[in-house]
Length: 295
Image (cartoon, rainbow, N blue to C red):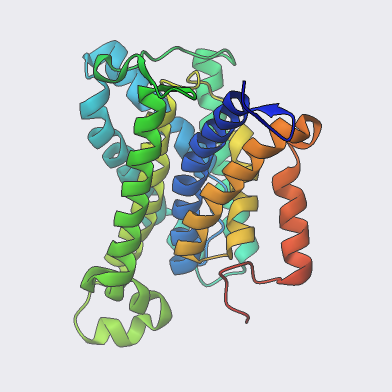
């Protein structure tokens, strides 16, 4: 048996895989948070609830409408994004000119409302969501066993993250979004519908959370608590990457997931706090985050 620092290589690679899977969810969720904060300057504490909502919408589609996993990957982000657009249009946009604390308190209350509603109807216990047949089973790589669905999560999360980054940073729509948040009056003078762009921005962030929820459903049980258990970690990822930095959110999400996996191998007792320790160190050295810009 091959050993690395006294650890069997299979155990090490297995934990790295788990860390990479967790990092995939961290990357997608922190990307959504970074978009919303970077463009709207709103600290979206409802992001975890929207992640949970995505998982539940996928679950309910399967149970009551017979809509399977593959259509749900497309439909659920649209549904959650639409719900986010409604929230932005009728409530959140009234808070843009106020202190950031008002947006945080509103989204925190919204998260409690969504979570409480699902706990009332479904309790705290999780609901199972079957792995799609096309991705069941796995492959023996010789040094480890790779479940197909876990591999799919890593690949599709990376593709989605890069696609969204390219949309924001490399397209005309992304340029309009960034310009609309920097100087809305000037952009509106050119005939651009700025309120619609702001609504679209929040909808994209919420849709990413819903997409992550669908991806997570076959791995973790669909539970009203799944978002609240994850959102604090995701906020830590965003802080380390730099608040509002889109590429920082992606890179840091994967790296911190891997760090968490390595910690479970070498010092399991610290695996639940290693991300927060890294966050504290980064804030002491570089308060703006690894990829953030100094004010």
